[in-house]
Length: 336
Ligand SMILES: Nc1ncnc2c1ncn2[C@@H]1O[C@H](COP(=O)(O)OP(=O)(O)OP(=O)(O)O)[C@@H](O)[C@H]1O
Ligand SMILES: [Mg+2]
Image 1 (cartoon, rainbow, N blue to C red):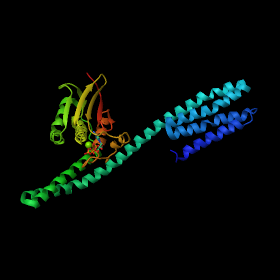
Image 2: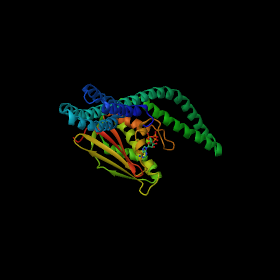
Image 3: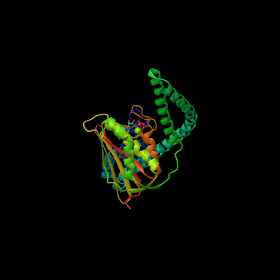
Image 4: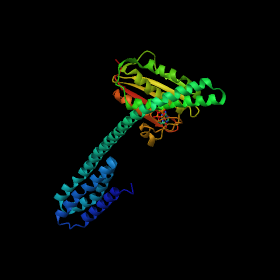
């Protein structure tokens, strides 16, 4: 902040206006009215640049600098002083309102930029995935034949080729999911059954990571209208992330899955006792390709977020670094 020209422009403007205001001849109301109003410029500049915080700090500062002047004038010209004192709440209102609007605008711009980036990425991925998939299928087929024919060290090498091609295929498929999001096929789905089926798929990973999974939801309740195939991807991603995180250590390697429903929405939360995510990374994890997991592509959370928002819901992450993380899927449509 100290290095930004807007910061120093604001400070210089407030300083120059304050000095001008105090040295202007007391008998000439023109200069006093002028300086009093020019104070709005640094307030608006700071609110534009630094949002609510900037607007509030600058308007409070200007009010404090202006107050002694009001008291001085009050001793001399009662009418002008009572007019001037109304300026202080106005400074605060202008600082706060401009700050809130500018924060809102910044957030809107950010999500627009992200949506644009994701769109470009999706288009690129679709083109690339198409080109890559056919040769990959040929390589896999040939390597598979070799694994059947070769033994010993050569056989092992052919196995590696097959495994790595499978991994590449998974990455390419994830790209495709991203590039060509299928339209939602909604149907009434029992969420507990869907969560159970995801956990069954992950059972080998859970066992390998030495993690205990607690299912904190009753069976056979919580029906919602969703696309089960797409939502399965969301829960698989979140559960896998949680198991991987919980498996990285700590005394209690635990993942707790909860399911709640109120009158308006349905919430599924996946909590883990892993290392959590530092506050400054909480947004970054939704960027495609951000990954700290060995072998991860960094597409799990962005894909999950896209699917959830297509359902009209939200994906929220809450984390206490060092203690764990909770990912919550909020879906519209509550208890019937
Ligand atoms: N439960 C969690 N605890 C701690 N960090 C997490 C958790 N879930 C996600 N993260 C962080 O967010 C990153 C991105 O997650 P994301 O699921 O998008 O990608 P990934 O798991 O790395 O790869 P993949 O594409 O295979 O899912 C992870 O690499 C990890 O750093
Ligand atoms: Mg993941």
